[in-house]
Image (tube, rainbow, N blue to C red; front, side):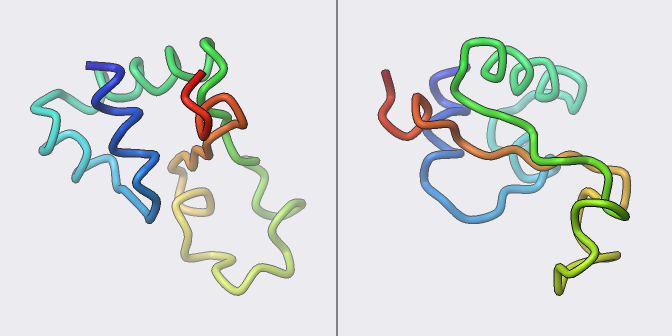
Length: 83
């Protein structure tokens, strides 16, 4: 199932937790665990969580997932090459 999640993420675009949970048929807590597993394996990394400090000049400041208490992930080089 981790491979399926990674394939969905590598297609690009923005994927909400709700959409991913529905598509994978898993709970939000299981999805979060899967994302953390992919992070530990080096395929994903978390984007900063301190919106005040890191995102002050961002046009999405105050409206993105980070500023609303969510989490944003990005692919690492390993995640984009699939190795």
